[in-house]
Length: 242
Image (cartoon, rainbow, N blue to C red; front, side, top):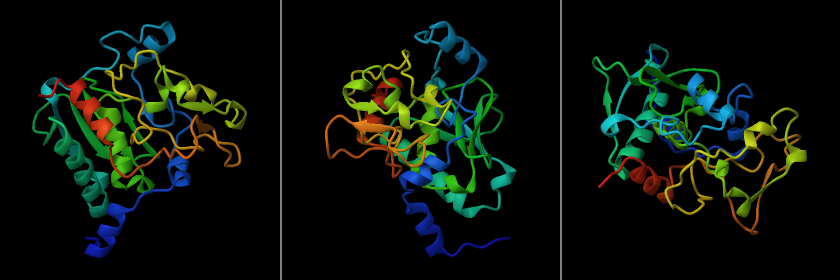
């Protein structure tokens, strides 16, 4: 069995990936680079029915059963990062994660191609895919955010008041990843540049050029350290936490 000394575990657990690392983890075959959406959600987007209450479903009673796939059984670093990301969400919200027993609907964390997750409760086994480059606490917290029902922050309908999309810097054929999604209900939370769900400056970029610019100078965004206070407030509202 592989052994990871505590110092290595700790540095990996607390490493904050750069904007370049975040951008490299995107999958051009998935919506917005890391979102696995169901056929029903695809239809909702195409037909403009994305305000349907079933477009993004919440986990019943805020309880999320989960398993760790065999592909991660020997990966102590990955398991430590997953545990830390789960703890971040449970410490700041009323959501609970439990190891799956016989539940039909549950999340499986596994090694996959890049970083990706289904969006919201699916009613059956769904996956959070984590390639080794995704084994950072904030990155895993981001993917868990999708599994809980979050889209990306810059997909909000009001985003043009806060960021400018630089369309000519986006890779050919990738512009759809910057569309606004009309189903997103931010529950009266202000636009959150600090959200762990926000794109970085160079996502889907040609030659490292910025694809997003803040409307105000000096604002940073795209962090993958941990979920923000705004993320926690919005999640608590979404799940009707006390």
